[in-house]
Amino acid sequence: MAQSPKGRLVWNHSTHIAGLIAVLERLTEVEGISTITPAVIGPARSKHPALQLKVSVPIRGGFKVIARKGKSVQEVFVLTTLSKEALEKAIDQAMMQ
Image (cartoon, rainbow, N blue to C red; front, side, top):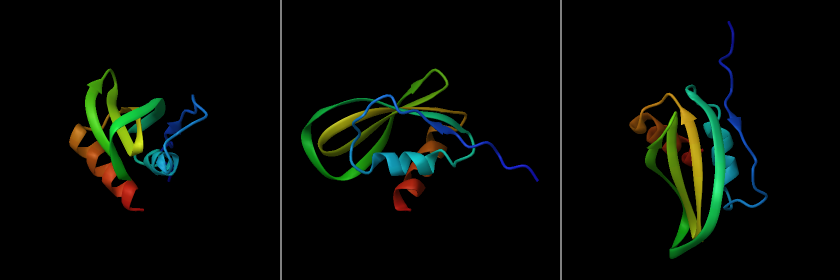
């Protein structure tokens, strides 16, 4: 029985929101997710004590996800065949592990 191929996590930047990479690595295990790319990190207007990931808008081949923690916000691009609802469920499960 062949194992489904694992998605890949692209490291474009040297800085990431604390705890984000661990969640994204768990997401690469989800069938239907091919590539996850953390992108621009910047300051947020409001403070979020815990890491939050929210599916934002569809992009070609997937979705843009917004990660927030503390006073930082970071864009994450997820290339996937999953629906928005299925991706949200996968993110919730990855956050709980």
